Image (cartoon, rainbow, N blue to C red; front, side, top):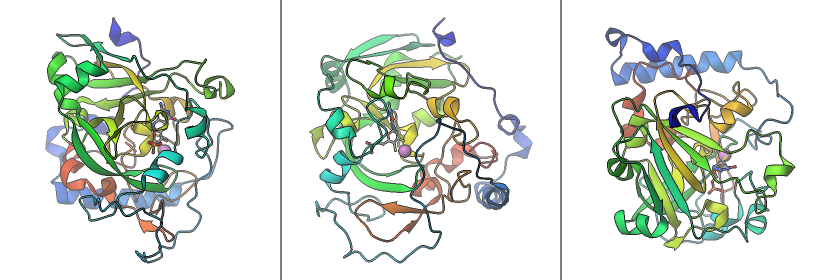
Length: 334
Ligand SMILES: Nc1nc2c(c(=O)[nH]1)N[C@H]1C(S)=C(S)[C@@H](COP(=O)(O)O)O[C@H]1N2
Ligand SMILES: [Mo]
């Protein structure tokens, strides 16, 4: 059964909270922030060898005020929903995390230059009535591409604003028709050693790169499959030809160069959870109140700016997504 292809992890008890204990959204936000402070006090700095993201850039905790003139942004004029300027194309395609190529963010562009992204097949199956394999022509024919200007907040403490083109995952799910038993969506990145030197160089990682969403998260309108940015098709370093973008979650959830999506009944174990479960959770919702064990998540450095900004709950998308997590303790379900 396709369902058994992926390792799964058990649910946290707080996710099976009885209905009567569910809180109103306002109460929930208050409690989530109290829990976050407790977690901050308890955090210790132990680092498992060889299985983690690079050290954070988040050295200080003080937030400097942002002077908009201190920026290298190219001035495309594009703004996100909060009025933040889009990062420059140059910044977006020259500072990347894509460990299949290298863990050096400045070298991904160079090392991925010859990555073959056409032809490409995206196989969607598992617990669906209509399993389907899409090539990129199918995708462009079936799903109208929309522009979405989203903040991307990496768990390491930096962020960008990226003008994506893509389409809501919900549209693709409607094509394949998840069955009643489908509860989660698993994504898998291509792993082709002949083109991806990082696979062998960093062989201690649990390749292939896997990510997962709860089905209701995947159905949220903010969750898209992106095929382009700044109006051009994605370059390899950005996850060509098709990658996930879930802007309210840390960047590592936004899995690149996807070849498979499977609907499953049990919660899958994503790449970073398998690499270091104490540091990276299944949900990975951006949350300034819940520190990473080795650094604070209260602030971030916007690429192209000098100061640090305050990190926003759910990366500024609480209005759209906070209801998905009502009744959950976000310091446990981090
Ligand atoms: N397959 C794969 N997807 C991945 C990664 C990766 O190493 N491999 N890195 C993640 C991380 S940590 C981040 S922050 C974002 C970065 O996306 P960007 O390089 O387009 O800014 O991609 C995510 N998707
Ligand atoms: Mo990241």
